[in-house]
Image (cartoon, rainbow, N blue to C red; front, side, top):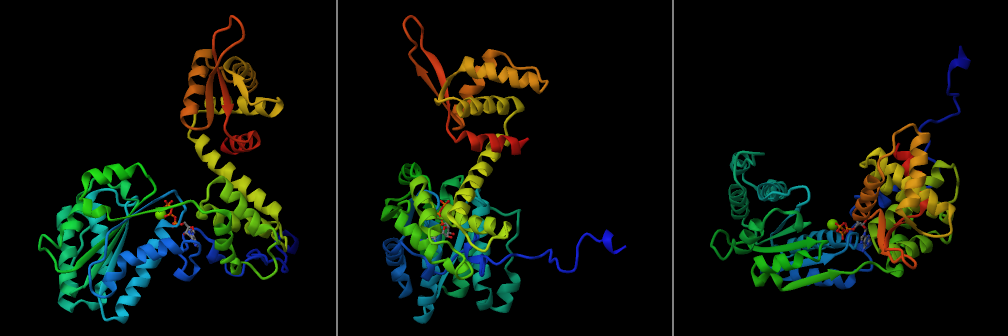
Amino acid sequence: MADSDPFDDSEDIFQVGNIFSNRELVRVGHVPELDRVVGRNEEVREVGAALGPAIHGGPPETTIIYGKTGTGKSLVSRCVTREARKRAAENAVDLEHAYVDCSDYQTEAKASREMARQLFDNVVDDLDDHVREETSIPRIGISAADYRDITWELLEETDADAFVVILDEIDKLSDDELLRSLSRARESGKIDTHIGIICISNKIEYRERLNERVDSSLQDNELVFDPYDAGQLRNILENRRDAFVEGVLGESVIPRTAALAAREHGDARKAVDTFYEAGRLAEKQGSDEVTEEHVDAAIQRAEVNRFEKLVKGQTPHVRLILRSLALLTKSEDREQFRTAGIYDIYTRIAEKEATDPLSYDRVSRLLKEQSFLGITESEHTGGGQGEGSYLEHRLLRDPEIVLEALEEAE
Ligand SMILES: Nc1ncnc2c1ncn2[C@@H]1O[C@H](COP(=O)(O)OP(=O)(O)OP(=O)(O)O)[C@@H](O)[C@H]1O
Ligand SMILES: [Mg+2]
């Protein structure tokens, strides 16, 4: 009987290897403390200056933050606000806050509700029993304005000196009413609390829209967060070195992860993620060291995953067309291919897979569509003598990655 048991006693199926000592530090979603925020001193100072007056009971200034994804906008805003609350409390000033991620709460009512809910959670211990019991924040059935009234009531009830609202991903919000009413609540006599707003967006195009629609008073503090350079990314990763068991990180792991990330995007989220994935690969292989090969493999893995998601939503024929282009790119010494060449390979693969190939025109059109999706690029090239111009297509990613992703998407 014993030999039908697939696990022997010495095997621990929950074994995690000996790579991480504090995995949490390198997981996405982890919000580090202010002292782990590095390379954003200037930005931290500016957000600090905007909230500064509130720490002494005065009015905080409204701030708008723009910057590409992964540049620390949400992180800096949250950490500085958290710090501001602590400092205000030391001065016996009551500074409250709410963090609303508008990509999760896109309508005015949902965002307003979330603001009220967060404020309620933050002040619940300070409320009189009867207020706590009487306050309800229904999920549905009341208007955005009603949710805001609940917010004002809570602020009055707790006698808050200041209220800082972070509207993250504000470009996702369907209109500007919440922003407008927040910026006017005090002057319209609804509350005595000073209100500060931190608006965050990774779409610089949003700026114009915001400028058009909202008071110029909102444009006081505009901050732009730049992508991180290699040095900053290195510091960010160094600061989380203690996620790993001492001595397991190969010497070049951090510099390489940082250099590649700086070159490609300057996105700290992605860099931290690569750092973690490299460790996970080492762990999976039962290795006791994380090397730069793990870093490269982690990056490749991430690209395959991203591309896989993109092609999963495509029809089988589009996948065959992409496969044809990837095979051509891999086997020949050039990057650009005419529709006819791609069509030729495509029909052969389709036949091999026993599917009827689409018409030439259809394939031609699909190829153009892919260039809209950013998977391929199409370009008109002048032909030789007497030939008209024709369209050439180029794959925008490494063919190996495309082929691997296509295989996994099947
Ligand atoms: N200066 C930093 N120091 C330490 N970690 C950082 C820093 N900047 C970013 N990170 C890490 O990267 C993650 C992403 O940063 P953050 O959420 O602030 O990006 P973002 O600019 O808000 O991007 P998005 O526009 O996609 O929302 C953070 O959770 C954190 O782990
Ligand atoms: Mg963010």
